[in-house]
Structures are given as C-alpha cells and as structure tokens.
Length: 305
Ligand code: 13P
Ligand code: SF4
Image (cartoon, rainbow, N blue to C red):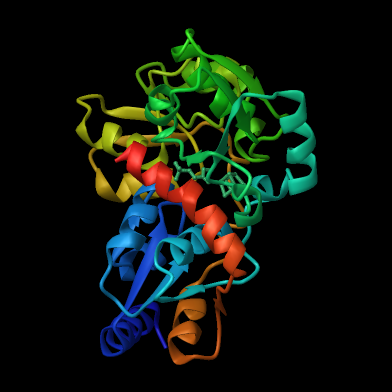
C-alpha cells in the first residue's frame, strides 16, 4: 500500500465508524493530513470536549489521550501508539507533590497539562503553554506552586510580578537542549531571521526571542508575519510543517537535537490498526482519577477559554 492509499483507507474507516482523529502539531505530516483537528495541547483539549464522534484516536502522547478521555468520558478514546509518553509528565509523582505542598502551604497548585492524571487529582488547575499566563493571572490566590516545568512557570512569573511563585525542578528534556550559544549561532547564520521559541526553552533562550508561544502560536505568528525567515525554537516537525504551509518563507531549526522521539512514534499504520480494532490502547482511568483530574482540567477550560 502506498502512503496515499493508506491515508484514503484511514479516511474511509474513520467516516464509517464515526471516529475523530486528533493530532498534536508535533506529529508527522502524513499523520496531520488524516486528522480532523491538529493543534497545540490546549486546542486538542477543547476539541476533545466538542466532537460529536463516538470515538477519538489521539495521535500525540499519553497525557493528551487521558485529557481527552476525562473531558469526554462517554466516548471511546484510544492512544494511537501506546508507547508514546511525555517524559516530563513522569517527572513528579503524587507522594513527592504531597511533600512539596507541605513546604508551600496556602499556595494554589498549578500543573502543566504535561503531567499524569493521577497527579492532577492533587492540583487546583492545569494549564497549557498557551493558557498558562491567562489562568495564573485569573487565579485569586497570589501564591502559586507551578509544577513541573520551571521554564514555563518562570516565563509566566516574570509577567506577573505581583504574584509569588514556587517551582519544581522538572522540564522538557528536548527543549532544554537549546542554549544561548545555539541562539547566537543561529542568529549569526541567519541574520534576517526572527527567533520564535516555545516557553519550555531555557530563560536565556526565551529572553532572546522575537516571539514566545505554544506550537500553534508559533505557527500562526510565522504564517502572519511579513518576515521571510524564521529560526524555530521548538520541536523540529514545526520547521517542516511551516515550510509546507509557507513555501515562500524559510524556516531553520534552532537545534538539530530538538526532536521529540515520543511524538515521532505514531505512524499511519498505528492509526490504521487502531481503526481496525487491532491496535492502539483504549484509555480507561479509575473513577476517582476521572473525577479529581476532571475538576482540574475543566477549571483550565473555564479559565482559559
Ligand atoms: P503545546 O502546548 O505548545 O502544544 O506544547 C506541548 C508540548 O508537549 C510541548 O513540548
Ligand atoms: Fe514532552 Fe518535551 Fe516531547 Fe513535549 S517535546 S511531549 S514536553 S518530551
């Protein structure tokens, strides 16, 4: 079967079975082409709650499929490739968070959505890269324990000097690879290019950026901008997607190692097997986790909408 034939068969099967395919923007181009919706973590969460399909196949990482199931408990939700997890989401477990909460009594616990559902049961609200500032700003509590990514948390904290922040020492193992030296080198190689970065990057990289935002934010900015060249400080699939979306513009990776192997695991074949009922993993979560994490995720949708 060619890639095109496989895509046609996937589109036929998903129509026949009334299944919606959601794909994070870091997925490969062939996967994005068969998706009903592509976007950043926040967009996927909102879309998961809206769809009328009977089932949802999530092409992304585990916490995204769990978020989808929690927001649509009546739907069957599959993670297209069960091996795809976000390493950052596993960095902080519930007992460690409970200890941390004792150190910061009275703080609102704000969890990056890149966390396990179990952890979210002990948090007040979760946020994505595109909604973190709005949500932290809207919280009545002016003391915030932001977990697990201190880079995203620090970026938000700088813009809310009236609030007091505490952090955990987690972070995305991919985005922290980029250094100030990488930014300087890329700028020297492409002096006309704008630097667009994800807030999971280190502060010394974020400080040099012309634009800081989520994956969808970066894509929208580059598409609308009058500039012709861009250095992209997020997962390298965005360089490829933007090159297709704007063939008249040039896009360069900030660092060649900015590839998330977990996001790269999902293939068209995974989606095909999932639609045939012989692949993927159906997401099921204990009732208490559905309820506890649901409260935290729904608050995000309420405050971030
Ligand atoms: P977005 O919220 O921008 O989709 O980011 C998700 C993610 O995993 C970034 O590495
Ligand atoms: Fe997780 Fe980083 Fe991969 Fe995003 S890029 S899924 S934060 S490891």
